[in-house]
Length: 139
Image (cartoon, rainbow, N blue to C red):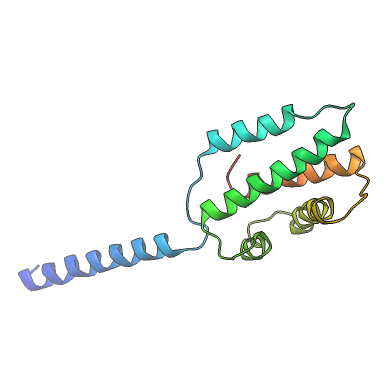
């Protein structure tokens, strides 16, 4: 090969590498999360549950919702609110209806009075949050 062709090939390789780096850095949801941190926080949520106290389930739902939102923010999903970030991440969810349902349970608990939370609904919501965290690569 001549010197000119070699320089051209090296230039093409460098440009391709730069483009690949730019795409990787700007791709939505491209960041890797600290799995150990998320697993420890999830375990703390699970360990906080007391079968005889439904209030612990309500608090666990609030904590799980905050943890999912943290994962969305750390992964770089766009949006000013958690709902907007969840919409940005819609391709990540194995079952978006479950994740949205869990978030709706949280919102109902946070914004409505006299909401009765059953253990069954709480456990379903927590399972959805757990799957959502798995889908994001957090746990």
